[in-house]
Amino acid sequence: MISCKPNNSTDCCAIKWQSLIDVCVDELDKIDIFIIPGKCTVLWIGPRFAKFCAPVSLQGNAVKYCEKAKYLGVTVCSRSKFSVDVSCMKAKFYKCFNSLFHKASKFHDDLVMLHLVSFYCQPKLTYATECLGLTVT
Image (cartoon, rainbow, N blue to C red; front, side, top):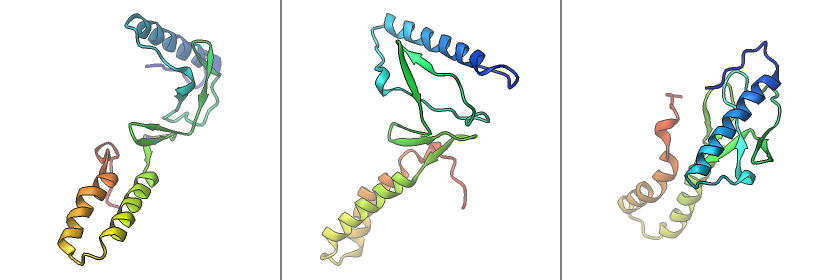
């Protein structure tokens, strides 16, 4: 884990961060796994998520900083605590439900419709919910 105390300069943090990235790239090269720098982004999560940090490079290419990143179908947001943007999950659910309801509305069988919604639409909404830390609200 990289620790840069608040009184240290951002350059100190960037040097530590850059050295960690270089070690990871070297180890991955040893086992023939190559990183595509154009597809890499930096996403800060923690109390200093909004602070500026010096640019970091990967194999000589600058890595861009972002506020949101999609990982395994889940959009992770740069915040003070781990958070996930669920709006795209809800949009996928409604898109699937509307499409299904449009096609199956002529059947007039509620049990069939319920089964189809739970089979096709519910997974769009519940994907990766175990990592979200959902609350009652």
